[in-house]
Length: 133
Image (cartoon, rainbow, N blue to C red):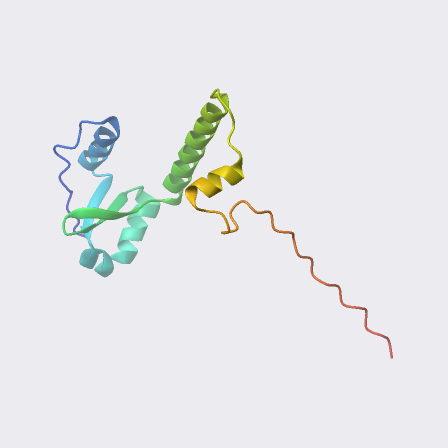
């Protein structure tokens, strides 16, 4: 597979961008066009799964989708969960009056959409046992 490295110059102002730029330089993230990916899909999957590469699918020179290993995906999900927990703790620690959920739904125009409604669980009806003949 003849992938080209995408230039990351000029995007290293922020820590996240510097982190990504470092991966580009090391060749761990590879930019590839849609046609090239289509023609070499199995090879691309193997490179992601077994060599730990990250592949960015590009359209008109701009990244639109990333292929990452399941290990990387699990890491991203764990980081997202940790971020959500930190934000929730921060929100719980804030002083001030709590706003009832129904009031928030009304303010956001979400009433009547079934959001936040606990639906009763349905249980399957048991069939009566078959009579022995």
